[in-house]
Image (tube, rainbow, N blue to C red):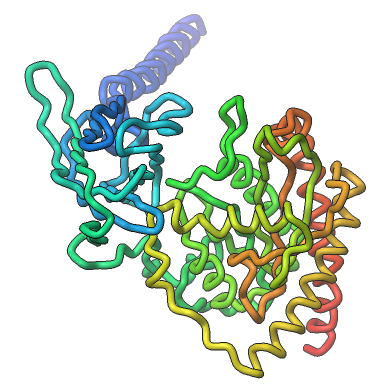
Length: 428
């Protein structure tokens, strides 16, 4: 009996020891085999510093990088700008960089314009040409450097010089058409999903920051966070399919935003923004809902539309190459009906939002926003508030405010389109 107990004890001991070794050895091998994985930011070249030197005759722009990259530069007029197209870069630069310049460069901005591609845009003080644009290899303890040398020219000698004579394609159509269910493409949408499509358009993005708070918050980031939360809330209800014009920090031209709505046969287009007032124009607060009209409802609406319509110029797109739409009687009739639907949704949206968010003293306005010009898609532009107002800004960065306001917008969408979903289901 005692022998059996001893044998059982030793067998149990060996089993425990073997189990312990089996658990420890693989874990040890796993630890030894693990190697640090690079972050997404480390995959792309990193810009760490920038300098501008010179005067109003000759100016040099220098961007420090952690590796060599390719660059192509071209010049645009009306207004005078120089555009640098480069591979996707992580800009590790201090907040506010580029708000002022020197010499021929009045200011500059930078950011993503498409997956894999970044852009730097100089606003010039006058006509100029690019003498040189090149990248130096790292040497003698100094980083790689992108260098652009500009020289002033007479207005009569100024020439627009697109790189290689080609127009840059900012948002190539994705190979997989099904991807249009989450982010928009300008090609035709192909999906068997019969639910009404809501296109959510976070304003600005990439090289275009939009407005910026004194504390550094950029409009493009605030509205993207709101748009993503709104997408999630609408998709959770299951009644509608949502398409985003962008879901990352990428610039999308105004015309492409409109095409995304039309090509997805959207039932509704909602563009999300956050306004700001210059100090000299006083203080304003609260959310505003805008619809399209040929004549602005007031001076503030006209100012805002002019500012928003400059987005393509801000990103360095030659606006003269944009084709004009042909207007005929049928389009005119469709547009009238569409504007009536847009106004109806705008009123519904204001009624829902005012229960949870502070509204502007005149919450319903209209102006000639290019992004609202899809003649067959009801469209509104929502200014969530003013980043120049500290109380509004506090709301814009608040998750609880965002959640409540997103809920009100989703409720307005459901109230506006819900009957259509019910009637479509009954007819089937």
